[in-house]
Length: 113
Length: 112
Image 1 (cartoon, chains in turn red, brown):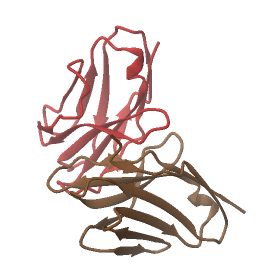
Image 2 (cartoon, chains in turn orange, yellow; image 1 turned 30 degrees about the vertical axis):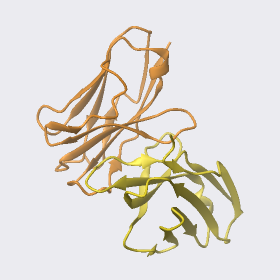
Image 3 (cartoon, one colour; image 1 turned 30 degrees about the horizontal axis):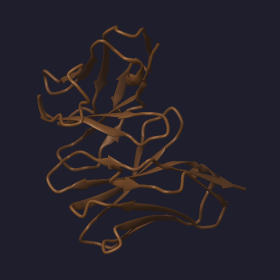
Image 4 (spheres, chains in turn brown, red; image 1 turned 120 degrees about the vertical axis):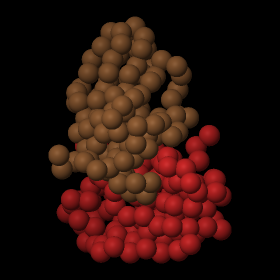
């Protein structure tokens, strides 16, 4: 596709449930990033993939959060035992290589009730 | 510990005038700075960037200035247009790391 695609655009889940958020990066982009944006804040780094491997996962808040990119293209962010504090917009971005001009998707708004 | 700060949550400017958005940072290891623009329900869109070896970068109506000694950068938009109304985020990165550290954003409103 022409841009970074994220699905679903909105997700409402109950506290304690498991959720998966999907990101389709721009074709040919080897670098992929996940960010989280809470209300009134800027995007906060979660994890960065170069190809299939997580090159930097220092932003993942705890072990309930996990992300994969098995074939070096699509990535899935997985959140176990969701908490109300996980409610935010989860943004995915990709870039051609390691250059820092990253292109963002429209985000997935996660609401934990 | 907010390493990138945008102290003005909002700014209102008349169409045709200059908009100046400010950003301060605390980490002297940051060497690459970017501005992103965000419309509601969309992801941030890259606008302009500057490397720490420069003090100015210009692209059309947009100019970014970097003052390393003051750890300050600014985005100038001139002339401002109503379509520029959006939230603007300043971001920075360090050396070989690939993560961007974002500020909290400034909401710009350009009125006719």
